[in-house]
Image: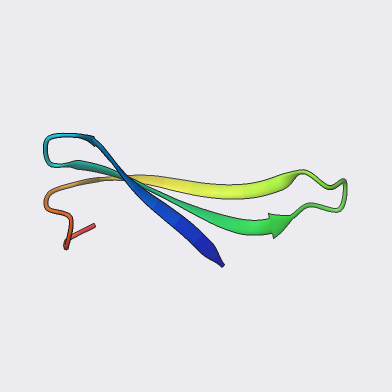
Length: 41
């Protein structure tokens, strides 16, 4: 699994993880919003 982390605004981070492809070829992703510092995310 690969993923990215980006800063949304002060003390808010969005983490997105790629979960491969569905049988139809569509990419599957999971994302979460984390409130706090970058190390907490």
